[in-house]
Image 1 (cartoon, helix red, strand yellow):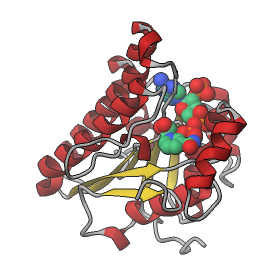
Image 2: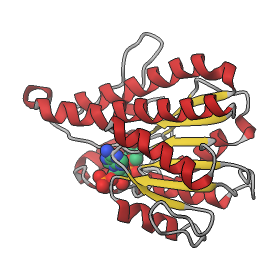
Image 3: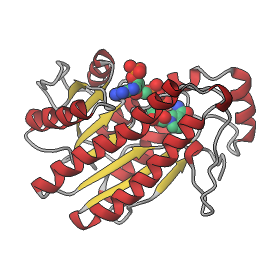
Image 4: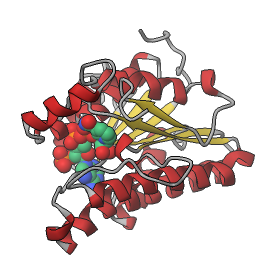
Length: 266
Ligand code: NAP
């Protein structure tokens, strides 16, 4: 249940906003009063998300209401920089909430993993988060504004105190990228705390989205059997936590990795 208007002064940039979790996050942040800049590689999907937000601003990069859609490939440095410039030009301020949700899988066993599939996953899931986090932090620091940066990792990238990863068969590329997101976010939290910018990661477990639709049913059944809550999560379960981390209700939380897994791999 959303707390009405907890984010009424926020401008939230959400990447991967045309996908399952990014769309649910966009809807939730808008329901709490945020203006949303919805970005996706698929510009049409980003515009569809904006149409769900209750405001009229569906034209790319040109809000007629509270929200706007943007097309960008977050794995390209120039595109990530231009995205932040476009959002600032559009809303006359930098985003105070930045949710990096864009992500891909290219699963293969290590023995057959192609260099291309390794590079693509690292480029989107890890470098993309670096580029967006850096561009957003630069914009916030130069304008003297506080902010909340939320990076979507995965329980598959979980790093225990012993630095042992959870990992997953067929996902050497994905697990490495998601573990990298946790380290990147904690390091950014150390550097940016003095500027009033909080940085946290969210580690979803198995959530029903187009991404997990690609996973064979017998694998999903096996994983579901390991989940203490005995069912997969919904995108809204992740959005609940992101809204909390975006709001001042989490005002003294930074560098955290919050698991949204129904207890899987706790
Ligand atoms: P999804 O439905 O596939 O959404 C991902 C979105 O990211 C898609 O709209 C995709 O656009 C977009 N995207 C891909 N490459 C991009 C790029 N280079 N630049 C900008 N946008 C790009 O997947 P999801 O399940 O919602 O996943 C969202 C995030 O949660 C991902 O980071 C994922 O790794 C993470 N996660 C998901 C689960 C889960 O169980 N679903 C679990 C743990 C973590 P296209 O459709 O055009 O490619």
